[in-house]
Length: 208
Image (tube, rainbow, N blue to C red; front, side, top):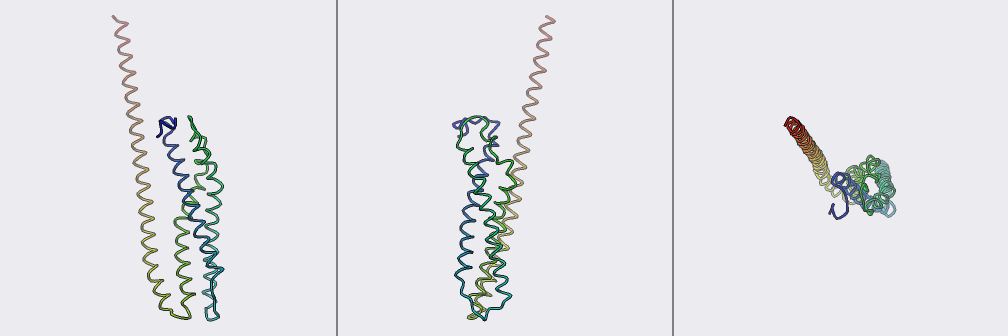
């Protein structure tokens, strides 16, 4: 694939980083649009009663506002940066990936990715628990409690997976960096050995 696209070998890593950034922004954009839309529908269509405690309504309004704001931030970042990455990815030729802004915008890309996949999903699970309390408060508090009890271990498993995934990703990047350094050292040693052998051969030829 790399050879077909006309990308030199030394630009493969930059090209892979470009494709990874595009995939992250596309996933962030889709998730942000979907879940922020759900939060807005829940806010508009929610049926409230006077029996609901004001504190619960305050928590619901704060959580919904945070959820929508966080996903709107991720959506804005994805919408602004993704077209530039798509334009760079559609071009052929040497140095295409190096001309893409994905390296300079890496902080924003990682922010959008983390917000939409970690912080936003935790807020979404909190939103589900709060909505269940609002809906079932006047009818069956036990049902709302059951939802909360189920969501707590789900959130814990989610956090454990996120931490484990991040550690595995860091380990993989470290191993790739070590492998790349080893290859560079091997190439440098080969070039050095070749230079020494060439010098010896030239000196021997002159002596003869």
